[in-house]
Length: 43
Image 1 (spheres, helix red, strand yellow):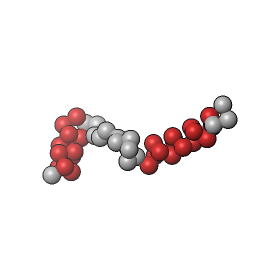
Image 2: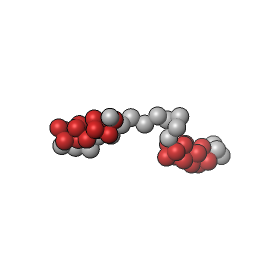
Image 3: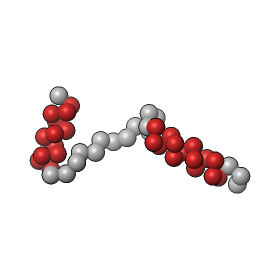
């Protein structure tokens, strides 16, 4: 069901459908946060 809705949106809008990111479960956002913490830790 979700996949068919996503495909219909992509076809109708002629662009990729990007869903919102849940920051609590996002591994890429966690990696960026960890890296930022290490960079600014000395300050």
